[in-house]
Image (tube, rainbow, N blue to C red):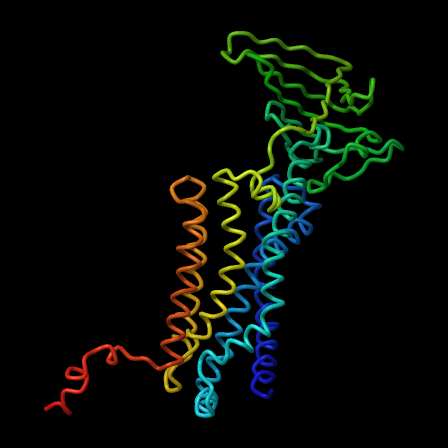
Length: 388
């Protein structure tokens, strides 16, 4: 009882500490990446924290697998360095005796990793794609930002508004980083407007001192006043200049595309199994590989943690992390090969995960029974001094 409880308590403390550190690091990286996407206009700045949360939740299965691997490796390495393992070995415990307390501690974590990779991962991908599509397919009027050049969804029109005044007539300061929504612009007067668009074989540049937004037949129009319209052919041979007192520009609303197939990353696991295309099987291999690798790495960490008490602790941990990186890179390699049709799904799963499990079991049997390559040699060669 003491043997099981002492190991599980130390593993729990190490796992929680490692998980908190890794989640903090990953969320910081996700925040920097999402802020970069928002600055380039790929995502809505208001959805930064939501997208960061979805990304962190989607990668939580990998984070938990790495945390479990590091926790077991650190705990067992400390027991080797402080000669606790020597005490357990002297009391009749072998390496395989530690498998039972490890599995009793890790089985809830392994189930959580499997649920996150098979269920939560596609759900977070769906929500992320939904937020991105809603932002990229927003209407042209919703794209207008005070003090910034903004283009429409097709890239054929660029609009710039220097400032806006409220309907009460009180002017507001120009705030370059603020974004006016469609509802806000409907209640405002705008000034110093610039619109550049490509219409067929000509380029049209329209500028006005002021204007406002109104609705005609449920379609939004930007009404420009006291401005100028310049039309020039793309070959530069024709030029037309028109001055106007009032001119209306349709700010068309982009329609959300209802068709199109969801990417394999956004499909649930049952849909991947029901439609076994190369890309769907590749995604399925990645999701199953996260759970299977967590089991193999749990057993492998028990063997990789064996260190010499007189040696430094850095080399053992570096070698263990190298094994983790190589294993997960092989999962990504399998994803690419299955997606391209160069490798069979079942064969790759057996070769990679089954092969790692078989080698781990063989290594554990060698360590537990203290087998040596000298035992395979004939007795005459194994003990030459005695034979002489």
